[in-house]
Image (spheres, rainbow, N blue to C red):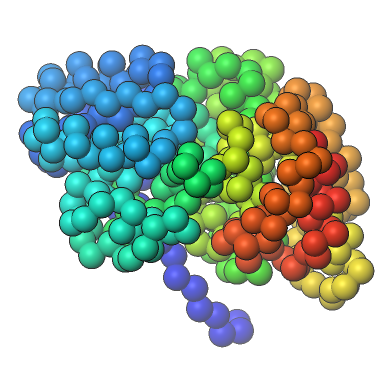
Length: 385
């Protein structure tokens, strides 16, 4: 075996499987007497958690958020946690809720304010202390935030999204219960599922790929073939389980080998427009894949990423498929799942240059298998409108 080196970061513990939600309360009891419970706008599962926490003697202060987290939301959550004397944080919801909870837990245990530690719009200082104990309970299958060490936060004043990032922010416990996704609407299933698919394909072709993330990505892509089934029949627990597992693997992959052009574009678009992250990634995925393939063949024909695109095609489509089959397959999938173009969120041709300038500087773009030219970036974004 050739010499290799890689560094893998994961949560302290991951519990996966149907019915796993019941494991949260007993685990929470060991973390403190009172939790800040962060949820999204439909807190049905969080309400169940409150009952189960109370049954084991743990209090809970509910902190619902509406939409993707902003700097102001996180600051308000930290204030609420301190006011209600919370010892730890539980986030039960989609990626937005989990990112908010992750950031709140970090600020509960560290001095100063959020902008001291935030990238891009803040000082970017390292967090000196481990976060308060944090339990992540995803209710969607897509972002993988339950197993990552960063929180993406919007700053409306700057029209950007920036990351709070630290090894200290890895969740203490991730509880992934596919049953919590059985009531997801088809549209959310589609956009989050395509986000999961993106977070498997991009790490597989990333310049930072390593043998462990390769294994996760390959297995995840096999699981992600259940997306159509989960979309067409939301009560299909087997398909929901596959997508929940694909999401976990995608989160582990992105945390340990980086992403690519899709997420490079998604970062500035999410900051400039009211566009859900998963839907943005879904709209971009076929077009970024097409651009990467063309650029690699034109300038780096010996790149190992080309063989990896072939491999992804075989996993997703069939044993005889090639990379050339991948783009038509992705286009058909996004059409069948009714993914709108980026223009539906207000992005127009007039903003293309500005978005491309910001995307070229995004951290995710640095792991793309090839550096894309300004013309390639503009053509890709224009195709996704």
